[in-house]
Length: 320
Image 1 (cartoon, rainbow, N blue to C red):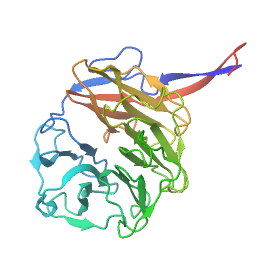
Image 2: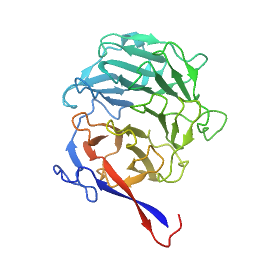
Image 3: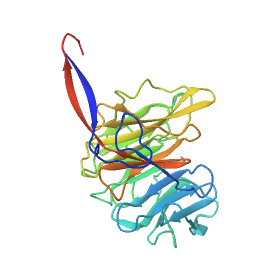
Image 4: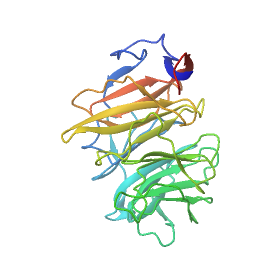
């Protein structure tokens, strides 16, 4: 017997916008209009004000109306830092964390003022991703360009390495760049990272060890870098996850792929999400107005994707 995983929409009765064949309930909408070019990092607060934050090569921006208008945030204390990573406190939409080439910073007031955070001792690597544990916000993970993952139990005052089991860069001798990080909404010891070339990895012990979770995502490593993967976890059921990958079809064509897992990343199935040919996926985030959906931000539109239910079907005569 073989088990075949079949998906059915949780929100299959919902309609609206441009429907995508094969996955009922998907809606494509205009915008948000990003303040400039392709952002380095995008984060959507999911509590209080539904504020959208974007980090670009020209600084930080915030929008309170889904991207129709943007305010530039104050970044003077960071001088000429190149900001590449950002996250928002899970319980306070005004509290931001940013990082990049030059260190880590924290704002308690939505970007009006900033203070530096301690960086992991001995690291010279660029900060590429940041995640705060929803249930224990003092627990912070950061992913770096060359030295893997570090974890802080005290809000960024002290750090320890948390990289055992993560893949090496193709050149060897150092960790692969950690481009995305997300922490389980119910357990601060469970976290996930995304790499451009080596797929996804998971820890269940606070970063003491990591294992690859790429079943169903295709072959890795990818031949060349095309963009950072994105991961989002359902706030209703932490076993439900979505990930976005940009994959090169050939040297000049990149396609956006969306996958979902219903067992904490053990298995993934591809979702039929049609991204316009002139667009690329930017990031996945929660839909703050509807826990039954995730949101894919692309360079030209917003696509709301319903979480799917997955069932196993036995096929007689087939071997797993």
